[in-house]
Length: 186
Image: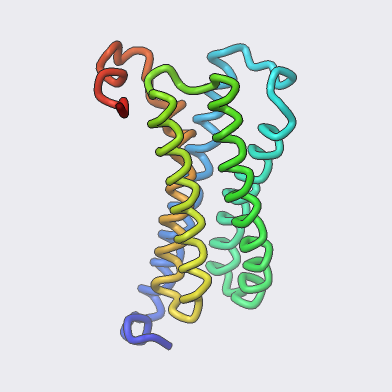
């Protein structure tokens, strides 16, 4: 047991686990609302997207679902299940890295960049975001014996991959020229 965990009372530990579960649920709701709003706003037609975009969405949503399940499993005290599911999480993280970078590059090639970002800024934000996600997950796996750091790193990694959903919730077109003028790389 690490130093920080040793000093946490059982009731405080249970509360903390429930807090992480609450955050996981909030993340999942954010992703569902963000992409749901996007689909509703633009009269969503899934057939216009290439197959890799659908796979990308499935894998990223699987990560969010697995993160919620992992938090539930810990809350109910099934730590051995959490460890077994962690192997699937590691595999998903590798797939997310590859698919995230691939999808970003192909979006740039297709010109499918949000109008408030320059292509260069879109590449930097999406590229670094997915790389940092992977770095945080890898760090969390390396420190899995330190549950305090493991859960913080996994939460941070999962928050990083919610930015596209948050971007779809924000009314960027209503902000007028402000975001375009502020968020460009030369």
